Image (cartoon, rainbow, N blue to C red):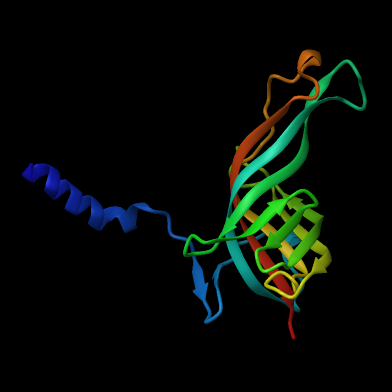
Length: 187
């Protein structure tokens, strides 16, 4: 009993050392994830400031379809993301879905368009992206977003097997996490 209690106390004290640290900058209004080192093609223009950074947890959805180049061969094709974004306190206030769209609970929304891609340092993860806003809606936290970066990805790659004629039309949901960084123009 004493050994078990002592382990619990030591484990509790060591827990902060075992959890990977994420760079966080705090402002009175929100908490954001600090941007990692990025390749030049994923950098936002100089007139952009980081508005918000949140961690996403969800799935990348793929569908088994015939290849456009050969109707007798099949491949997993990306359909859409489905994720929830969480702030540093663990509160979910943004949904991410097809478009690609990010929609906040305050009614604001941004739809992005991919501008650049870079292979993740993690070979088992989907690429990092730079997206530019093609539309915004509402008057909330996403209404001023002009650029979005998807970084620090884990998982989400399409399946490598199981897509053939008999499974055409079926879908697979592949777990992923990433950080999304939202930028807006300097006022």
